[in-house]
Image (cartoon, helix red, strand yellow):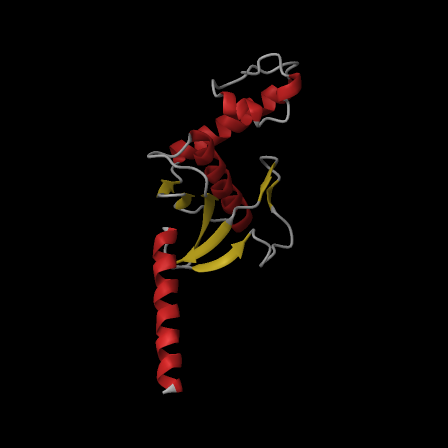
Length: 167
């Protein structure tokens, strides 16, 4: 009787785990790295040629290929935000530079959707142009606000001193 009860409990836990995995929206793949503290890269990914460094939320291995995964659990959108796409593209570029092989795509996980973002030559070029523009902004005396979102402004570290802050 006890063995049957334990078997039933084990089966219930397995089914619950499978349901949770399915709801995660992520593919079945080996997690090579995660930035939650359970596994630790000796150092972040670094591409000296681009002056770029970063740590994706996850690196998964699928069919022998490393793929970056960025998770935004609070986001609910039908299409990915451009800033999130650029962040994921930066992780793709970092993987290309550190492993010598560019991933074909990365995954962007929102609260209710997972987006496959192909790392195309066009996206790579857009990322490099964005990085160049950001470097130019670093040298500028002032940078203009690039959005019309009061909530985003309130969350900015410069909100109290910004002349363009939205109230």
